[in-house]
Length: 389
Image 1 (cartoon, helix red, strand yellow):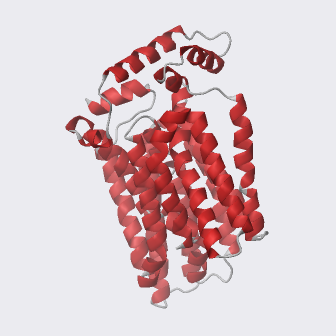
Image 2: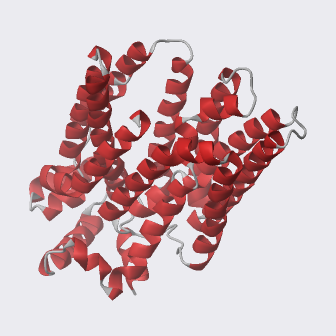
Image 3: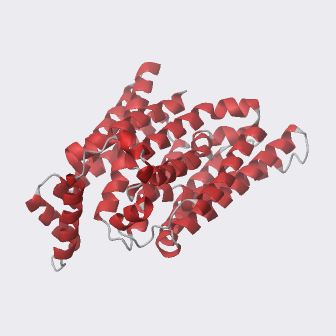
């Protein structure tokens, strides 16, 4: 239950992220997110009972829910199209780096000290926001033309020619403002349905492949498989995420989104199959010496495969304008469902649990092959035109 409280907060954060981001700007939304996270970590640190612990977890989740929408959108809005995928994946790289550091620190410090370390990135972000410009697209959208030009020039450099990009921005904003104000229900119109299916589908398959259940309870999974100590497996889990995510960031803008997604989903399928097999062997008292090896190997293959594509690419495609706010909400709803049900499913059948996750990974391969378009090297406007045509 405690593990899933963060995702409940994140769902509410995702539901309000669009309004906050459009009202206060991208930088304003990030400041608000950091403030919620700081409040949450302090509540965890000073807690003397379950109530304050749960409140801290909830506030941290709410901040993360807003972050998960505004950061990819901000990066996509300021990045050149040739490196947009890599830069958006950089966000995922920082997430897994922080996760890996937290896993490693958790093996040597108390949970209260670990909560204090969560303040560090929030404070660094608040300081860093002083030195970066606001999104030019948002400034143009709200009519702050002078600030729009200043921000665009800061991003392009002193010698950069901003005239062409400024004209494209203005034309796009004027076109959007001439249209009726969009509602959530508009997403279900026939011309937007493909965009909705792509965005929601990728997030459903990302989450129901089991990543949050496995990540939250990786230590317990290793122990249940027969390892005498979960520390070695947990440390390996933490260390493998960062270099593999870096590889994914490079491949995304070279090979494209679709190939990376399909390779990633194939790897997560293999991992779930291996882990499910290991629990089957253990439950039937077969090859008992091999069962822990298969679990550790399966989990490491899974996290490597997930990190190279399924971790980052759905967020890249979301940031490129594919049903953004609803997609983030669906992502956190899936994260809550998986983290909440993981222990119940493992009590029912470990083999069955990983067979379910393997099934979702297999469906991901088919979904990407049939429905997801390639967005590499296209502007945000070109992507929207391609999907909605």
